[in-house]
Length: 326
Image (cartoon, rainbow, N blue to C red; front, side, top):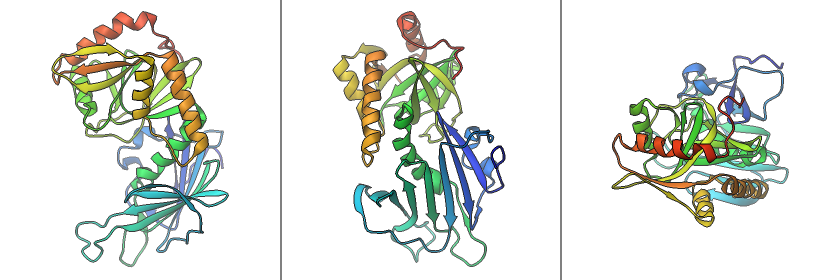
C-alpha cells in the first residue's frame, strides 16, 4: 500500500532517486534506524511509487544463473551478465577472520535486474551459518550493489555519480573531485574544523542537471571522513584537487576539464545507454560550468583561501539561487 512501509521495508532518497527495499525469509541483523549511518537518507513513504524497487530474498542457497554473456567483471568483487530480459549480478564476499574453515572468497549474493533497472530480485546467503532463524546485514546490499545500480540509473535521470567531496557553504554547493590520495578526506577535515560549511560526503557525490543549473547532493558511501549528512544545494564551485606546497587555483582548458571529469566519473560500462547519457551530461557540465584545479596545503589556510576566490568569481558563475527549491 502506498503511503505505508511495513516492518520489512525501507526507503532511501539518494539525489533524485527513491529506492525502496523490502525483504523476506530473514530478519535484519541490526535495527534499521541505526544501520551504518544510513539514517539521514531514510525517506518517509510518499503517494507515488519509488524509482527503484529491490526485493531481498535471504536463503541458504542461491538460484542458478542461466547461461549468458559476461558484460563486465570487477575482479574479486562482482560481475554482471546479460540474461536476456535481465541483467544478472554475482557478488563475492570474504570470510571473517575467525571462520578458518572457509578461507576462500565465496559467492554471497546474486541479483536479477530488469533491463530498465527499476526492479531487482536480490538473493543473499544469511550471515549466520548455524541453525536457527536467518538474518542478513543491510550493507551486504548497499555495499556495493546499490552503488552499482545507481551508477547505471543516475545518468538516466540526468545525474552524474562522481568521486569527490561535497560541501555546502551558505546554501551553495562546492564539489571537489579527486581520486584516492588526492586529499578529499583531508580537505573534509579542514572544512569541518573551519566551521564554514556542511560536509556532505568525502568520497561519493551526486550531481543533477536541473532547471538550467546543477544540484549537488550527498550519499551514504564515505571515505576516511565518516561524518556524512543528507543535503542538497545549487552548485557554485567545481574543483579538481591535489596536495600542494601552497594554496593555488588554476584554470583548466575545456579539453583538460573533460579529461579530469571523466577520470572521476563512475560509469556503468555494462550499460551502453547509461554510458551514452553520462557522456552527454559531462559535455553539458564542461560547457556550462568551469572546472578549476585546486592545489592546497594541509593546514587551516586552505579553506579561507578558497572561499575568498569563490566569492570573487561567484557573480559571474551560472548557478541557481540559493533559495531555489531542490
